[in-house]
Image 1 (cartoon, one colour):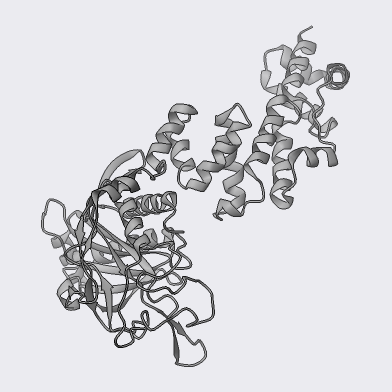
Image 2 (tube, helix red, strand yellow; image 1 turned 30 degrees about the vertical axis):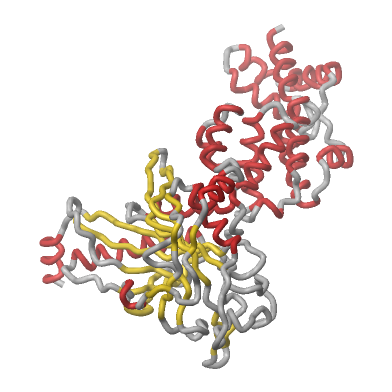
Length: 486
């Protein structure tokens, strides 16, 4: 114990975290990368296979042109260099779910290199470099029997087209890694080339992480983290690994270069195997596939099909709708959410109110679920907010109506009519009730006249209680002020 404390004092220093992410995005093509088998998820095991994706002797792969197009799209969307000449290679390793004994990937001649994206963490913007993107095929899947020591091989996923996106080691914290991962995810979804479902494995991430003393240029010994199936798990795993590596370094111990699995149940990393380097895979050009040569005219044609991307849309929301940057960042986090906002905003003149409703009421009720499954259509939300703006219902009642809309999918006007929730805005009717409340509470009335204006909340509350929350709050305040100062 004493020796450990001495070591900690000796090695006490500030460390800098260095993180690089390797993202694997399954591409939304109709068929696999080198054969005509349909892509699927959840179908019976081994029901979408053929001699090509099973690696049978004598078969030859044929490259899916759509995969190349999608890779070019992602390259253009991330300010990257598109290599007009690129080549496939064989990456040799053994897994039970890799039927050929190698993975057809790209190595020294990838299709995309030298890109970048901008991230925002706590208001601080930073550019993160992208080393490369390359096309490759996915492996199969092992299904482990929980009752017996058996594993089953499902090769439906074998040959699914992947785009591997490798960042520069520019990330300096788990928070930056989280922001970068979200940005890449959003771009892929905006381009509609990957569905981004981490739970189903169509968007996966491995992280390389090391620590080094502040000021040191040489990187420390890195570990690789796998098995992270959510954005939050990526951040949690990296935070844990920062703490683990820091403790080892402070104790004067050496970091082991290895691949670690993240266990979300215990919130710990667990050793899987020694970390491989590129030479361990014995890469060599794939003899079954000719090099890919891309025509400049094709790149230009693809560039013209690019949609408005997250950063462009964020800037437009700030300018066109006069939204704060914070709102615009959240609303453009996914294409579906941005589309939802714009549709609702067209029906309501107050875009900021639409933004507030989405970021508070809607996202709270969704509880992290995708907005595509929301029962409240954007047109319905716009109609609800417009009813508040027109004075048909109060803001408080609107929140009650919204909860009913989320549960039933009914139009707000239908719910308001069924429950008789129309706001009371008849001045004569409200005036009579105001006078009655003032007369019944002379002490509070005298407090108001003596300048204790906070008592107004008491009077309005009494009126709301009397009208079951349906009194027009603005008119109620005006009537009380007028009655109390006469």
